[in-house]
Image 1 (cartoon, helix red, strand yellow):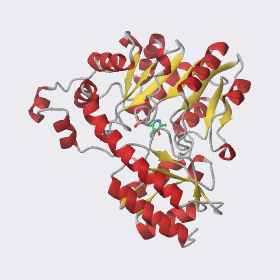
Image 2: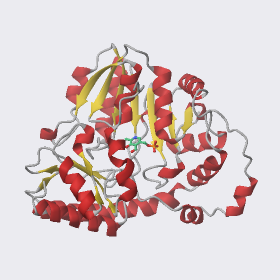
Image 3: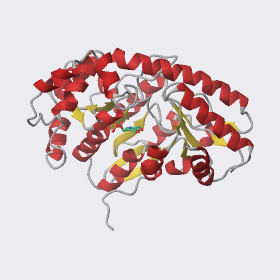
Image 4: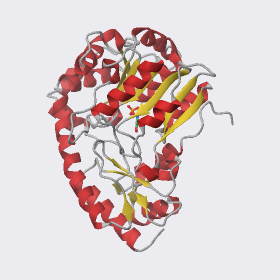
Length: 373
Ligand SMILES: Cc1ncc(COP(=O)(O)O)c(C=O)c1O
């Protein structure tokens, strides 16, 4: 079989288990809303749907949505906004619009699969910027500085990071921008989890700091709307134009029904964000206690942002058999680090309902204590 893209081990892992899990403590976003609950919070009368025209939408996204995304990011030119069927699509279109075979790119490693597999599929020459377990995955900007030369066309990062749970400080983000600027390359910034910030304000979109910044956001994570499939890129206007020409061969546009809901959500984002951030904050305290109580069995730093914990499981070289058993015997879903090329770790998501998190962590504790690895 000749696939354009390499298989995505994360998606292969989740494909069935996600739907069968009794307690999902694997997901990278906040608890998804039900449609009725979201419409209530956004004060949408369901009869308003009857007024939507089901004709094709605009190629780069509805004008009003682009305006709202720009306004929220603090930029005036909505011609820089590309709305996508999920940020995944916006990212793919932008990569296809900016990169060619042979281009040099530097990509954070590990990375969410789309960030690296897409540039490999294009034929780019990929250099890894490693987040190392022995450094507790802390990003090393001095190392990045050494890796980026004027030949590099793009730096690709994601902070807060999936799966490692680490992020940058505001000062480190400025340093990252400076490294890109000094070398004149694009800076691709996947900020999928940016609104899930606890002790410091969310990191801004790098497109507001740097003209060759390519920033991406989504409604799938902090907004609790993964099934809506809406994300966006904020990129130079000529990149939007080229990306749209790629979209002419794929999805053409977004659904106007989806755009209607997304518009309402972006008009009053706090209505969706605040309850989910509150839930994540509460869960983070549960995780803090759990980590302290399991010292010796697991080891990880408490994340400063996002809802992902990526602990090493003591004495377990390969966590896949353990994770399979946890799912089959307890119905509890986590993701083995092997899906990200990092053996010996598991990805735990703490964005869901507090009761599910407690239940999932209890099962994880029991399995660890029973030495089920
Ligand atoms: C880092 C990162 N970027 C992007 C996405 C995809 O987001 P979307 O649902 O907007 O396509 C994910 C989903 O897990 C992710 O983890």
